[in-house]
Length: 412
Ligand SMILES: *[C@@H]1O[C@H](CO)[C@@H](O)[C@H](O)[C@H]1NC(C)=O
Ligand SMILES: *[C@@H]1O[C@H](CO)[C@@H](O)[C@H](O)[C@H]1NC(C)=O
Ligand SMILES: *[C@@H]1O[C@H](CO)[C@@H](O)[C@H](O)[C@H]1NC(C)=O
Ligand SMILES: *[C@@H]1O[C@H](CO)[C@@H](O)[C@H](O)[C@H]1NC(C)=O
Ligand SMILES: *[C@@H]1O[C@H](CO)[C@@H](O)[C@H](O)[C@H]1NC(C)=O
Ligand SMILES: *[C@@H]1O[C@H](CO)[C@@H](O)[C@H](O)[C@H]1NC(C)=O
Image: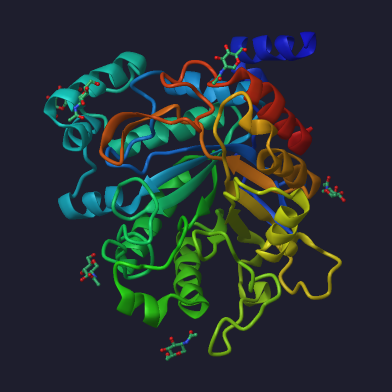
């Protein structure tokens, strides 16, 4: 306890001293993510959303970026999954310039509330002003993370900026109402170039939670399959890699990214297509990502075996059925941040399983509240590590007994 407090004080007093991530890119070696010195890197961190209507990283009306990143540091975490909407980049192409945060907040929240939230943001983050753009806020988050020794995993969460996800929200699948594939590739080429000046950004999640586009049953029937997945995901990976060869490229799966089951075994994806790591010129940049929200699980062994068959078997280096040995990261899981839920089967199982297989993870979610979610402004996030005003932990008990031990088991 004494030691932990001493380390906390040191971190608060002189973040520069404890910050230590290299500006060099990451790559993969077998089932490991490795840094440029060949050391294993395991991600242990949290999601920081920014893909809703305001298209801004959440929480800045309550705290400074520096304070929020410092809270992650307090937990010993080493990564954030920072989400963005392709709509932000579409706006840049359509108008020739990024939108200011003030305008974006007014569009999302209305004149009165948007202006008030904007003023609170600049009060907490005085380097921002009326002319600060959305992407400049992303840059400031990524820069502060780098300065405090936190990796940034940039995630394309949605096309149209809104709360994610449902099968009928128009963001579900390639070619869905708002999911213009051309614009998705364009948005990623733009971001791949843009993040070259941000050394904290090491990896990207190409698309969050692909799912059946049930608002368009003809599209779903004709294209919701692994073969279509392969065509679109590989094309995006090729385009990003051509622009920025440093980035790790995370491939998410189907059914809300709960399964990548045919990938580790290189099974037929339909019409004879197979995913083979060796087919990629950049095979040392490929990572798999999986989400899991089996919150009502009653058996850890059955949860573990479904995770293995859903794609964590890519970690199994000595199983001859595994053709594609790759790192696997659980980029979303989460639970109610109260004093008891963390003791249930699902949280305790993941807390034990993910570190035991040296898999990376990001919990959903750091956010204590959202500017707006599903039409409600200042929406309270009961799964947030932070409380409503992003100041303190929502449940000290869950942090001390659920989160910190999981970080220590992964990184210790
Ligand atoms: C990475 O971890 C594996 C398993 O613990 C170990 O065998 C390997 O030596 C590690 N690599 C480095 C560079 O520490
Ligand atoms: C504006 O903010 C106030 C105070 O937070 C809130 O009560 C109100 O519902 C908001 N307006 C809209 C349109 O959500
Ligand atoms: C914002 O930009 C306008 C037009 O370029 C300029 O007149 C104004 O001084 C800027 N405001 C701030 C706070 O920098
Ligand atoms: C996608 O957006 C582009 C503009 O970038 C447009 O030209 C194209 O028609 C759109 N595609 C579809 C299928 O709507
Ligand atoms: C196989 O290819 C045909 C023709 O390109 C396509 O319509 C069909 O959806 C594909 N099937 C699968 C399972 O990918
Ligand atoms: C958790 O327990 C603490 C201390 O007993 C209490 O103050 C707090 O209100 C509880 N938090 C929740 C979210 O139940």
